[in-house]
Amino acid sequence: MRKIDLSVIILSYNTKNLLEKCLRSITQQLISDTEVIVFDNASTDGSPQMVREKFPNVKLIVNKENLGFSKGNNRAVQKASGELVLFLNSDTAVKERAIRKLVDSIKKSRRKTAVCPLLLNGDGTIQKDPCYLRFPSPLMSLFYYNNILRKLVSNFFPQLLYSTSNFSTPSEVDQLPGAAFVIRKSDFLNIGGFDESFSHFFEDVDLSWRLRERGFRFFLIPEAEIVHFGRKSLEPKIKKEGVESFYYLNFKSLFKFCEKHYSPETVFLIKAVIFLFFLARLRFNLINKLF
Image (cartoon, rainbow, N blue to C red; front, side, top):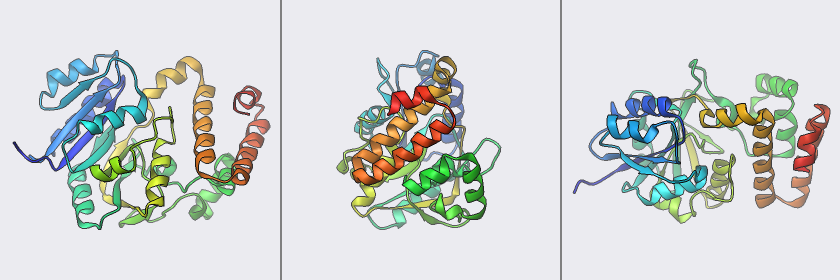
């Protein structure tokens, strides 16, 4: 039985075409010590059939219901054989040797380390937001959720929003982007995996916070490039229910994260900033739902 060094875990939900592109980008650069696991969250677009027909070497797990991001990834890890795990969104395309560079980097590092790639938008620009943001705070919320202030701060004081401004050499970042990162399987399991009480968003922020509390450090490896198209599995929901549903899910999870990890005073200040943000935009329905 061959030894598995790395398990690539891809959570899939109704992104058949993107998933196929993602798998093709991976299989072109895999070596013998890697396995690929697709955990399908009850897709209805033919994703499982496509994987079976076109990628017979991929380990396919088809779930009968949509378990969501946290629970789906946690279940998939239980089936992984590798010492290392690469969590990868299905709406990504992995550039040449990116996986090898991530694996080499984490192997050279000391324990309590995880690494992430340089995530790019579809047009090739760096996906700074939300991938390399600092942890939420009252001041950051004030700057980030005001479009004018965010643009000014991003241009003149980026360090207030982003944990790194160096995208050319390896650098430390505050958080791991859920779209793609590599961690030792044992470290992920020891921390308890993703918190399954987060239904949408901030699962990666919460995981990063808990890991950092235990002394972990996260490093961006810019030579490892992965294109991330972003939020494709949510597009049908947004089209059906409107962008307000996206805002609601996002801020509900933000508040949950803050209430879990911050003092009541800090939570109050962050909520006050968000309240004023919605009030200025006359989003009374969201105010009613969230507050």
